[in-house]
Image (cartoon, rainbow, N blue to C red; front, side, top):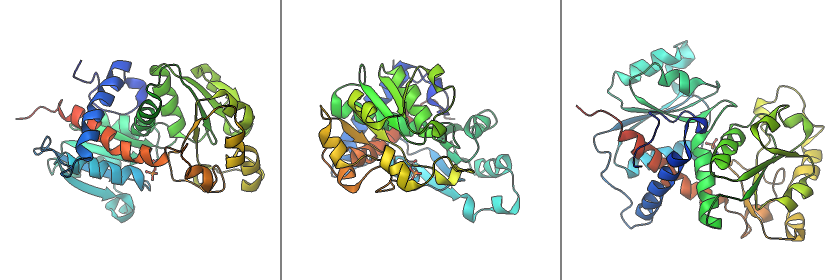
Length: 310
Ligand code: CP
């Protein structure tokens, strides 16, 4: 198979295992490209991509922009903070105005779950979801799984625990879908208040004791506490959260086997993870960021292949 089964990337749930494997195979080639002295290919010289960010981002926005430029696409950037959205313009009006400028693909981060899907059903351009509220962050999950495959040889059969604020996390949901499609076992770990009530229906294990979760896993993906999405108090204090669910070097070194540590960023050092763990040889946090560019190049390249050129 050398074609994706989908027209847009709005969520991992829409992808088949074959789609994910095709994205990884394509990313392998692009990883080789971005490590060359000339880190660019002319593949998308005829394509224009708009990056629409209605929510803050550092890694995802830069990573998409770099991926697009490495593929030689023309790129326009839009940030809601400095746009006419502030004057009351709707999402569809904003996007239609941008599309009138002959844009072929839209990469969008939006605070509302379902926003990317909504857009993909209404515009004549490819849509890539760069995070839609608490719903999905598909390219993050793809780069996370790609990084596990790179470090451990494969994802199949591996045990991955996702620790932290699962309730507000789009990264957790996309990771669960992606890892399960690739044959991994998934556990979530955190305070009862931050674990969604029906999460076991997705086929994941639930553990509220960090040490037991770490003893079980091959990989620990440590998530940030998303205070900006918490309208009520879910735990007494960050200090208490950190004491129960924070990963430090003492805990890591006491485990019976060596595990790998991941984090999607941004990191709150000293809360979910200490600096000595984040910077340790078991951490693959910076490899995740590097792989993000190759994986996003693959996603954009494969979706662009489905654009009908006149
Ligand atoms: N991992 C992630 O989505 O980071 P940003 O919010 O900085 O894009």
